[in-house]
Image (cartoon, rainbow, N blue to C red; front, side, top):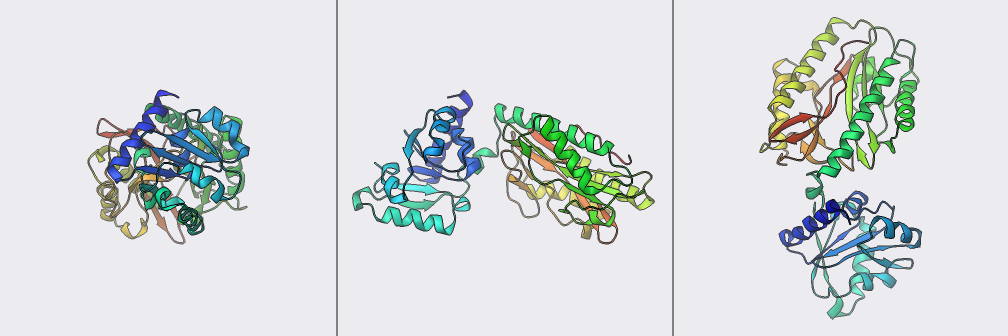
Length: 364
């Protein structure tokens, strides 16, 4: 077990005390991977103060032995009633937390039905333990930060490759393919989300999808992309122009860039996500475009593309050192288009350190 993995298990066990539970069932893939190292598609962890078990089927026995050697394997090849008692052995009468955000209604019903079949002395109490692991994952350790930085650099390179091909006549879909091809040929596990390429008026849709529509001279193009390296995600947005943009593009771009740079300069540990959002929101509102910025300023990034903390109105998430977040204000004007600029950053020494290295271009 690596030092980082042991530290994560220790942090999870400390959470048991905080949540007032005796054990924790972990079933969501990202949490399962973070805590055990296991990357298979099916399995349930059970962590107590002195034990760590993993229930999975025979497809993954060898994988568990390699990736999660300190977890005791509980074979789970048959119906849940067959392996559930073994997983929960010695926990009778105690409180066992589960992840409500990662459990379907069907799954919960199966778990509770299997628990109900246990003898009274062997039947633990299942209780919801929201964000039990997500709260820990929000603060990255050195191993995670190194993987994130590798992902960011590859994503930046994929953007540079695709942006160089963003000329009049090339389709949005062709540019998206260039992002994917470059990323996979240069070491990405996968893309962290489907690439967004949105030219001209299509850029007014924050989550637009690439079309078989060619870029035209003078258009703005929103390019939002991410890659996965060693399980960790990158997230980058740049808005470029094909040839010479119109005066409105330059004006809107400068407002978004000012808001983005202001937020990166002023965000600090101890703020809430809402306070961080307000820094960029105020710039855009004062410039007269407040109604055109409708999403949150950013979000955490790690094993998943959207994690805690959330930087958005009413977010009470506290910003602390070790979190990796995006800073991505935008202006979206129906019928005209949009501008979004996004960096991936880490909070260190109480302030933002930008990880993204891609230039913030006006024109190509």
